[in-house]
Image 1: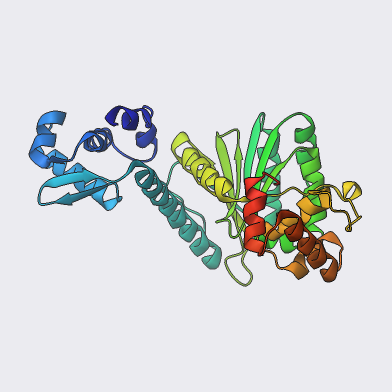
Image 2: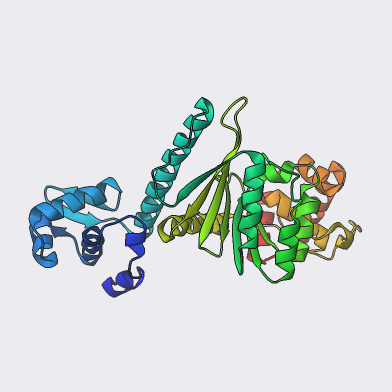
Length: 332
């Protein structure tokens, strides 16, 4: 078991998440077995004071517990989440600093290396265009309102998708409530975008080739301007990729066929049709029936009738059972 735990953490990974060399060695040692401060000092060839200082920092991050000079490691999955949250807290501090600038109309001063501010809708759009054009293999992103430009009008994405660049995007549920959202996202999916939806994505985010990132934030108040952070550096970007991966894995797939491919014969019992997938994709995000009907250009009664037919075909007594059946049989 100790070998498996060590193998799960590649060299320098915890260092990139903000730990010093001693803190990382101490945590790895505690994964093997809980130990006293004195035993750790002997094992790591450092002083007990050094161990105590490192252990207190790890405890502050939620990675270990320290009680009467005896330390235990937190489970690795929880420890990684704790480190990610700590890094995101640092980003939040930078966000507060930027917001204070926007409110006071003074110059931006961000001391954290690897972060650069972009202020104003036009400047953000130009930065995002340059950001996309620098992408060679993969773009990861969170999408949520409000929008600085016409939603989904992104010809650069069309061009990059045609070149084989992978786009993986998680849409906030509120994005799916925008006019014609399902149709417009469906067109991007038809071009190759991999789309999912989550109840509440934490921010607007784009990550290019896992090397750089762009975070966009709304106006800080009445009369304020939207602003963004350009992020460089392995440590920052790896945290954002980890955050994206966590949200992506929990999000619902969006199987939104283009409108021209939709099957309109709603009395058919063959399932799942392209229209079935569109209806189920939107419902699995938590959209109410009325919003689903509006996005698909259908009546509320038609949506509910088709759901009833799907429940009958799958033997589901409730929508929860239908959702379980959909997941089990990989309909989405």
